[in-house]
Length: 288
Image (cartoon, rainbow, N blue to C red; front, top):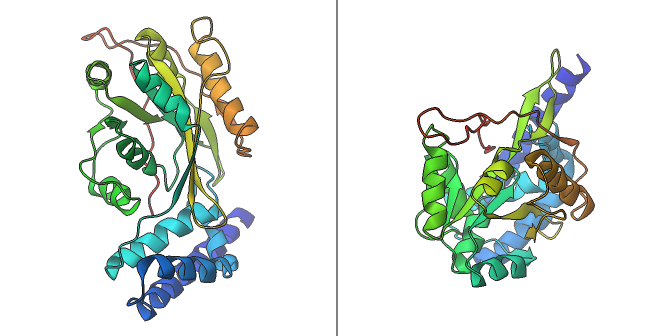
């Protein structure tokens, strides 16, 4: 009952916050978009009591309330035709550039975030063609556009042919981007367990592709931070489970992620028709 009451209270606060945000943006629609963005962000942060409810209500992947707030602000500004491109800071871009220079096939593993689609923009702005492992729909495309992506969003749905298509895309020189975190509901609770699947790590080993770690979040000043990393253990000598655990260690140790992530129990299974690995089912990408 306590969890239900907390979720209900958070839902009410978030709803009030969104109503305030819609009215505030419309009162100041005629100003310079970038200046308006800074003003809206500063005003919204002072109303943390409303927006912090996002961490309790409908937040399966345990993201910070600021991640949601930035997406909501961009959406409201777009509705009144205030076009603004959010600021992005990148850490570890040299790892991506190094792989490109050596023409190494690369799989980028990341976690679900309200601003995760900014990765596609980062790749595009640095001259990399990328493909996202996700079912293409209007929500995903709209979010990528809000976060600054220009052009098309190339995707691969999780079907029986997904891994075959991914191999082809890698051979074409495209980066493959995949969220590897999943949620498992707890019995008799509104909470979920956060798991990291070893499947993409196993794929990288099987096709001899390089692994690149990535994560995205929104900082206190309203900018999106993007961080890249690489395995801290030998890929060739490590199992997929060990690599998934190393990714979690990178999130915790390098980025200070405090979420309780653990490696999913996973058994390698192959598609009888193609002889390739089967991917586990994924949950929908978060977008509110």
